[in-house]
Length: 146
Image 1 (cartoon, rainbow, N blue to C red):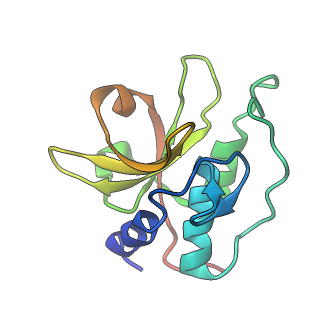
Image 2 (image 1 turned 30 degrees about the vertical axis):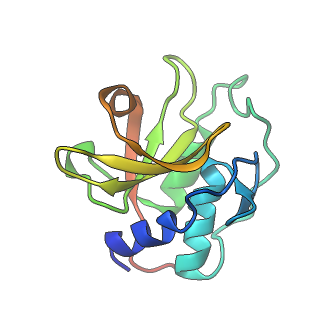
């Protein structure tokens, strides 16, 4: 599965409404649900069960739960080596835990990414300077799963 294949799968989710803690193409998903849904379409099943989570999950404890989960299943890479199909992890506010995800859909001068955004649903957005400043980690989907 190439990065372009990952992007093609993610683009099929565009227009899916934002629904917290959901991962159903066309019906609803959040940013984690988008990554979960792409994973299912690529590999057939999710790598682990996702426990229920609140909108402020892991913030009171300051735990990087999403980052740790990404490290369990995705291959980390340098931000300078971004390729289409890579998963981006964002820290939305200084001092907050990182808990927004997207799929890099275009590289070069006009970088873009696909993500599920509250009140907008799954959209493809410019990876503008404010978004780029929020990227704290990058990952690629594994070539194979065990």
